[in-house]
Length: 409
Image 1: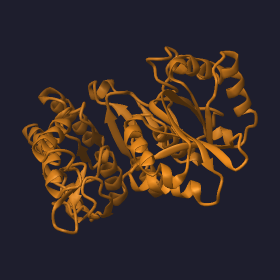
Image 2: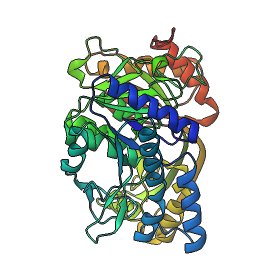
Image 3: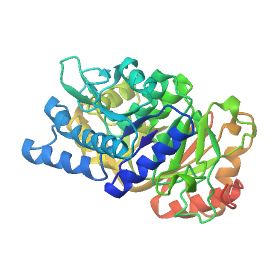
Image 4: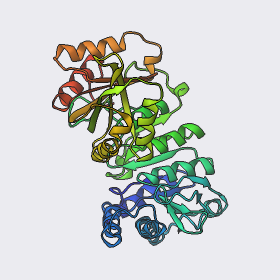
């Protein structure tokens, strides 16, 4: 069981988490719990490190020592509360359970997760309460797994312990066909394939991080997303994320996912020579800029091309500075940036075996006079870049076109 920051946001919510844990234990399960820091605590600690460190110090070991403390506090508080209710429980920090990572402080990857210490507690009838997001680097210092790292910890623990399932409790009651704040008829999905959730997370759905979903898919760990904001007896089944072979009815399109905070850069008049694209994207990669959609087309001058690509809005200034600094070396004529864009994606494993999905999507947008600027696809996803002002209209139209509306599941 994993509980996020909102779920453990104050003393009352930690007590409610304890009741959820007790209900699972009363159901006959051995229970291992992963917790995040209390809501807002990690942000507060990050701000302190930046203020006292004179800027971003997230690659330093002492940064990890500071920001990992939020989860340690929550784990201790939950263990204390469980024991006050007569449940044997003990807390584990990352290093105490032997979770080893590489040396990339602030963004570490798990390399080893021994199960012995946790299993000893579980076999004795106790509850193991684990501080998420953290481990031990090869230098003997505390390391952190980056944002969303507690989800990754929980799924890794479920895999290592051979858990029946990993339940991730959050402030929503499952994964919806789209954002209910945009479409009132959005409904909760009772089940999704790992691939669908992975694509949804990659294009902006905030329920789960891509890393944790990828880990669950690799090790075949069923993951259930459900709400912790009610009492155990009030909590519904949420959304189960599992293997495609477990899903009886595969919808053509399962979800429409909007992603704001996008930006587009266009490089005009790039010399059309072998290796020029490689140079551009190698520079951006080394600058830590993640690129998504890429479109290249011939320019009016036969020996030149125009290239456009999308990236996170927060990386735009850095990317522009990086490219402007090497303009003479690359040889482009002009750099044009556009922040008034958003990405809208349709996702569904049924797209593997159905034709006409792209045509329906493009016709639906054309009927609303929504122009498509960029397109990218995968086996189960089609994403388009459009003007940001049309985001909600596009989401509503596509949600209706693919028949996703209706009462909550």
